[in-house]
Length: 298
Image (cartoon, rainbow, N blue to C red):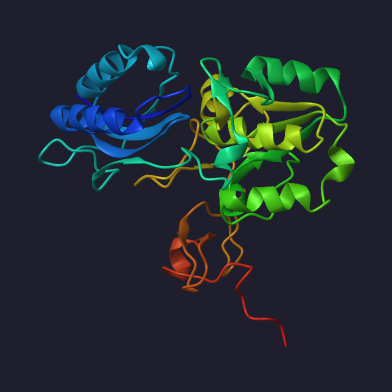
């Protein structure tokens, strides 16, 4: 059977996250799955990979838990399986309980009920996003990912905040830099949708009045429109694949930090203090400094 990867999340109250952690860990171990799962009293966020048949059993068993019955599982193709049948895209299985299932540093600000995050942006399916863009000439795309992710792929004319981690977003939206957008239709987007659930809520509570979020994130949009829509380039993913595209003939919008040639190859920043990834083509080696840590010109 082919190797697959599941990306999913759910915001819903969980009375005993530790008990759910133990169940999810045991379920993944039984099925031979690897990946990362985070739990909190706000819900669950996971990416797991393995054999397709095992993943189908995982989906079925997970949805039998009533709070998780409506999880939207997103499927993508993995790199492959090792000789023991484990996913090559994940070195191990990690299942943990945290204060947040996506780390904005604001667990006390987020409230959830059985319908999800309270006070978040209006969900837009990919087709609905196109209708909004066609009906308005002032729609603003707001990237809800770390800035380095946008270097290889983003929506056309999107605003990319100056963020190295999700914890930087609160300072960004409170800085005044985007106050001129508070009355404009803002579409937040991220990889699978989870970061925008929180980001759109934080923006709404800070006076942004017309906030949307792309339902299912870039992954669902790419599944729907491939390379024919408003998305440009490659998608950065946090597993062994590192990048993915939505079919053949995807544009390469990233530029090598060393020679400026087109590339979507990501490597670690050479500066130990830097948490970012950097675009670097094969010909230019294994590590480079990102623009935040590059030496000043003389």
